[in-house]
Length: 107
Length: 107
DNA sequence: GAGCATATCTTCGCGTCCGATATATTACTC
DNA sequence: GAGTAATATATCGGACGCGAAGATATGCTC
View 1 (cartoon, chains in turn yellow, cyan, orange, blue):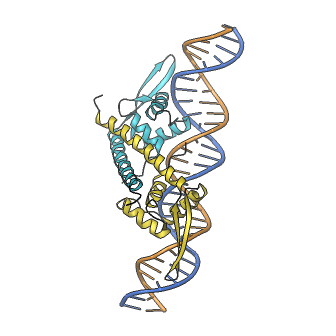
View 2: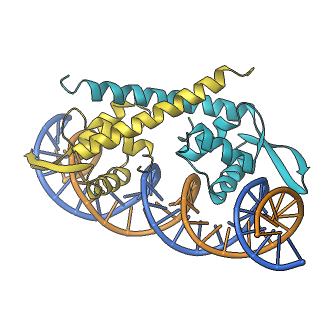
View 3: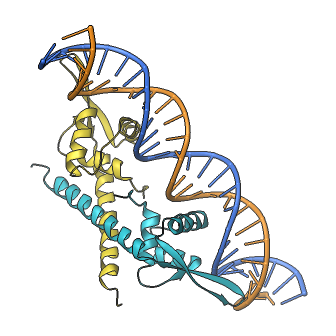
């Protein structure tokens, strides 16, 4: 199997499920997804993007120039979607296990 | 809020919910809990235990000598239980969000 | 033209985790 | 009684992800 994804990495992949986004757009989308709980910093974002690209989980999409500023879009690859599904499943199991244990404090 | 817990740390806290365990017992319990997916190494375990003790999430419980070998038990503190509940809740939300997005590929 | 928002990217340090290694005692096997 | 496996705790170094800070550049508003 693969290594567990950390929170920022997980949210970046989740944010890219619907459509390709550029760096700054990703920061906004992750903020929204996490209801303001996770604010990505540039160092985290671009480091993660490079890593995820090397791993084949995301790929560069188109580039656009809007108001003279470059927008570099990234999209989720099939491999990235698979990794996200696997990770979600792993987390679901952990959540289930912990929830059960926390409920049955009189076990 | 607090920082997200990494997988090994999360599982250590979960394993301690039911009853205090000693180091070697924790390794076995985490292995069982995760259905063999996570095998704690000593370096991970004792490092995490020291950290969690400093954070007030676990505390030393009794010590026993069984067959001449020392067993040092650790137990979950109320603070540790709170941290585990918070982390479980955070993960549950992330799982929900990701699941929704992955389902609605035609959203 | 000063200040702010947008946008990408780099550098550096910290914390966590893991693999390797060490130590000690008991239990089992031959 | 010698050798090996299992139990049990502990330390060290390296790898890696993350976050803080800052560099750089453009366009908009006042």
